Image 1: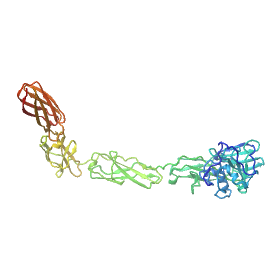
Image 2 (image 1 turned 60 degrees about the vertical axis):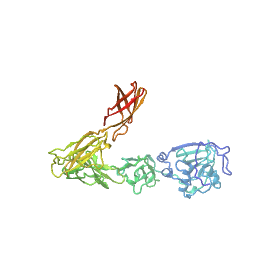
Image 3 (image 1 turned 90 degrees about the vertical axis):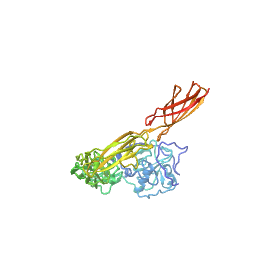
Image 4 (image 1 turned 180 degrees about the vertical axis):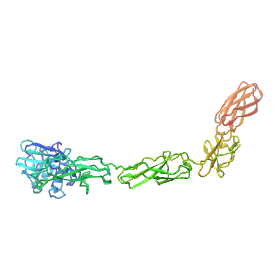
Length: 543
């Protein structure tokens, strides 16, 4: 079976009957003495992980990456010269190793051999594997190991308590690394100082070492991977390292001794670099409509790959300026203060923005006057004509444009000095405007308010005789108005009765009338925007 599996899990439920390799009995009892825990602490104490800690994120022999006994031992076997392909098919669980490689498994410990625990032999149901680092005696060994949901250890096992291996798998004994008789030992880990940002220099200190007379070599790592060419005490992160965590690996060497390496703690993630402006840009030019302002950069550190100017009027960005250093002042900038800032960009760096320049302005322009004023005439009622009469304009040559507005919105197609009020204007407010314009001068708008447009009401009355009473049906309309409301007053033979108009209709009953021919008078009192009206009719009151 070639499925990806994990091994080295301890503390799982034990199977009913332990699995052992053919010809091997249950594991003997043993006791353990731990020497170190964790990749870095073990290295600092002189116990190597064979480089696994720096590459534990990869999978070997299709085992799960990270803290995992099978992945660690597979890595060590490959490093000892074995193939990157697992030497057996089927399960890769630790409990199966000694069974799958029974022809290479016995009870004899050897340096570089795989110490193997079958399921239930002092471990969980998944079994366990480790690397024999030293054979002290036939009943005492030193191993290195990693564990699922645990960490990396070196420990000595003596065959006097629980936990002696079920057997030893001899896969690459001759090539297994042996402890050097004289190994340089790190006392305190290297350190990295400086802010981890693109373009900001970091400095490494080698830490302290128990061996004197050593020389140091440096290798910077990004997310655990060596950075090509980064082999000095100082390193300046580039765009490629943005978002990565950095470490420095220091290798100590001395003639006649085995070199050793130590790795610093990781920095925080490398952030975007900072582009710093030397100051605010300056602006040359006069703040008048039609003039051209020119911006000059104050400079940047480090030098950006591109810059652009951003012009503002009263602090608001002016659109469609294209980032250029020149700005032509136009009439829509009248009365505003103009400033500029500079934007800088470079790969791996945050956008830089300089302090705004000192403002220029307020922008000025010529003034249009009307020595003889414009006037307006006409009444705001349906059917009437409204008129704007032009005066005189200085300077000569200024253009005049007319507009008419209904409730603040321009009425389409109305650009003459006269306007005919229509039913569509009923109840709305009509305003006329004359806008005076001339190049490099501020526009002047003359506004004339004609008020709310009124419309006349029209009334029809239907009177029906009842016994000693009259029933009236009243219908009211007005051009441009739908659904008139208000009140009506009905007068018959000295009696006066009021009725309510809703949506243009009212019904009124006048009781207690003497029989005979009677005149009926109906008065509508009007509402805002609708004038009142009167209607008369006659009706014979029945007995």
